[in-house]
Amino acid sequence: MSSSFPVPPRHPELFGHPRPLYTLFFAELWERFSYYGMRALLTLFMVAPIAAGGLNLPTANATLIYGTYTMSVYMLSIPGGTLADGILGARRAVLLGGLIIACGHFSMAFPSEATFYLGLLLIVLGTGLLKPNISAMVGQLYAPGDERRDAGFSIFYMGINVGAFIAPLITGFLAQHSQFKALLTQWGFNPAHSWHWGFGAAGVGMVLGLIVFVLFGGGLKEVGLPPPRTPGAWRRPLQLFVGTLALWLIVKLSDQPGFQWLRLLFILVPIGVMIWFGRSKNQEARRLGAIFFFYIGAFIFWALFEQAGTSLSLFAENHTKTHIGGVEVPSSWFQAANPIFVIMLAPLFALLWTRLGAKQPSSPMKFTLGLFCLALAFSLMIPAARLAVTGRVSPLWLLGLYFLQTIGEMCLSPVGLSTFTKLAPRHLVGAMLGVWFLGAAFGNKFAGVLAASFGEGNTSHLDAFFGQQAGAVLVVAVIFLALVPWVRRRMDGVH
Image 1 (cartoon, one colour):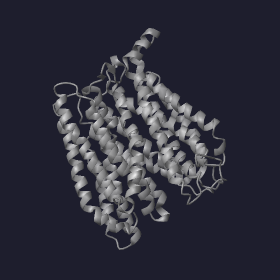
Image 2 (cartoon, rainbow, N blue to C red):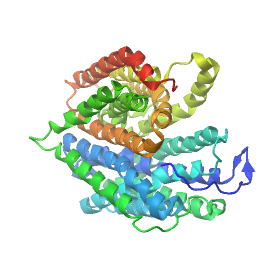
Image 3 (spheres, one colour):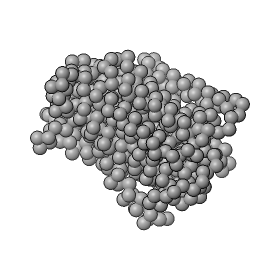
Image 4 (cartoon, rainbow, N blue to C red):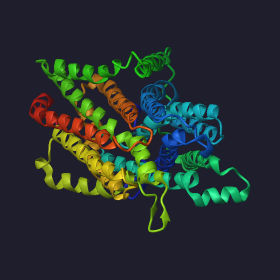
């Protein structure tokens, strides 16, 4: 969330950036370690048989729970950012959020269904406080107009991907690897409870992030301070929380038989808003129409991309070889592919856009290219699914999918938030950031909804499962391609 607080005094520098940036880098690295480490195990744990330490939930139930959980993380970021802006300040919000997240992970370290769901709730609440506000603190390290700001955020986001890369490797080893299960047996522990050691490791990661934030956060004492106390400051955060909760209940209702038609509204309403504002003669209104074009693109992109934790995770577990050259590769390790590809490709894309300069694709064209890459990625899984009928397939299929998805992400994700803030009228920037968070939230929810039809391990229909989604996104990408000139006119010179 943006902040209007005054910029703090100049900080000592390290490698050309304020030293506190690196404190936030490592704090966020460990927070993302905790989030992605747990996320890599979540669906696999829920569908695992009770004898294997899981909850033995049907695939459809597990993916819907996953989608609701990841959606909730993004939705709570909206009131979480406002609570910091109006009452707590970003620094206190990050500390409090981190503590709540750690409690959530440690709750999941105990093998019971009640502590599992309590842990999910705590992680949602804590992440809603921490996630938007640690980013806000990065922004407050730089004066308005400081040319180092974008580079500073690039360094910060690299921390996110480093954490996301190492997390599945560690938590996946603890939760799934036969070598660690043998150690548990040797130590006298139940090897079926290995999942909870993985969840506990995620909590340790969050505690490490808090230790970094507190011990090395001396330079952050003047960053993210609480605002001056004003009467009624609690009203706006409370209103946003109540509104978010009401929206959450509507989405949850859409999972119930007889109410699934509500899901259509989450795509039809934005389309209607895009057309309504896009046809206006007012410049600000036309730009709002363009904003909802990007919202729809992001929503659809995340609905497929975020199946990394649902259908793609299940494909890795049930249909992909887990031994390569005699080395055991737990299925959760495939979750490390996207972040390492991001680390590899991000500098190349930055160089590409810089070299192209004014000749680089426009923002709507970049979104369209991202959707084409996503369609190609899911198309790659059609032959993989057909080969899976006769046995486990090579890991190269999944790695190829994640590589293509990451190319799509490079075209879409870095552009989205920046374009939202450029197009939004000055008095609506905060609201448009909320719309961006909602796009990610609903995309995550629909990742769970779409994966509900993945099935209980039956391979005969998996080619159709991937083919239908690839075809749908391809159609959307073609429509987006046709709309690019229309959207560019409504952006009125904003690139």
